[in-house]
Image (tube, rainbow, N blue to C red; front, top):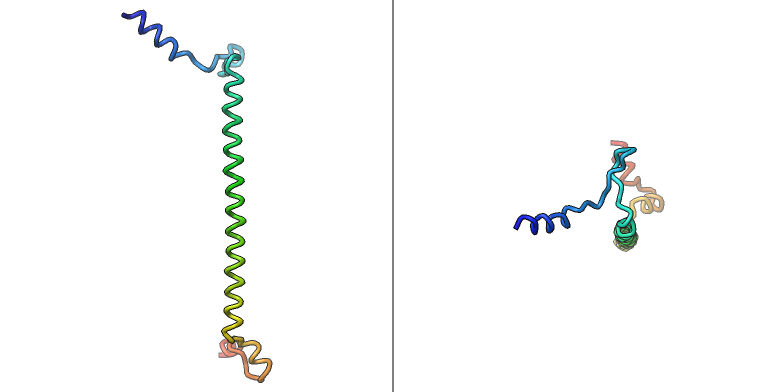
Length: 102
């Protein structure tokens, strides 16, 4: 029974890396370089796609903020509240000037 377990474990324990004796660094085994390169490129593509979608989301949020700001300006304009215009037309001191003077 022991040899079967050893054979089974050898397959699982096979490392993806080899120790470089001159530098002491772990290096990817030459037969697995292509596999590792493909995995890294897949991850790079995922990151690029995620960043692209985040950029689209930011542009959409910017557009909605501009639209909300425009709606607020139109609402402000249509409400008829123009303290500066009223003071210029009728010689009435504006609300802002009154607060500063007091």
